[in-house]
Amino acid sequence: MSEAKEPKRLQPKMTRGGFRVQFVLWSLWTALQLVMVARNLVVGTVWDPGDYLSLAGLILGVASLGLLLYVRHHDGHFWEEEEAKRANWDRRGRAL
Image (cartoon, rainbow, N blue to C red; front, top):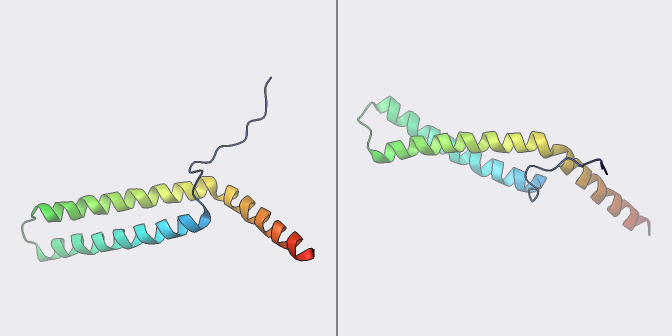
């Protein structure tokens, strides 16, 4: 009755390429928000609601990057297995 359960993927539909695209986009987003918040801090003016949205965007970007790094840590071996299977199929296909 007790079967050996396979470990489950955290994000089943995410591939290494999808991770890279999302990581680049969230990195750019976070860097842009960081520049905007830093500019507001350096200028020292009173913040309007748009400035608080930039701060919220920065927090969202940092949280998203943290989640992506956690997914990479957790699902990285699945991606390596998929690439090994794909390479095996390519090698076997060329051998024909």
